[in-house]
Length: 135
Image (cartoon, rainbow, N blue to C red):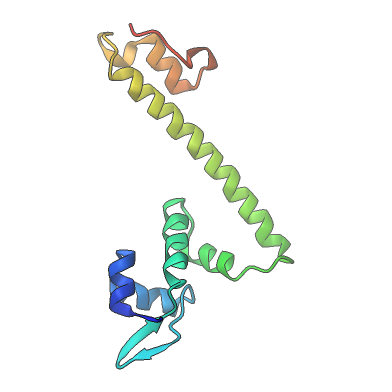
């Protein structure tokens, strides 16, 4: 069963104009029309979820288009994807340090908080501070 552009917009949380833009960029494609409205395969929702995930991970639309149209033989793209995965590992480590620091800060009594040695160690990613005492 095909979904019209309004249904895809509603289910994906994207404006119809964004869907038309993605279509012009070659990220998605309509398979026909339902009257005057574009119609899409239900799998388009999965593709849009992948696009949203990639965008939130810092991929450009050009990079996403390349990924969506990649062939197993594309070694250059494979190298770029591996590089992006490494970049994400760095961001994940940074965000994990920040999360752990904030969790410590939520119960820390040190004044001022940012001078707390455990807080500072967590921000730096000091492995000795994986389970810091509340100070």
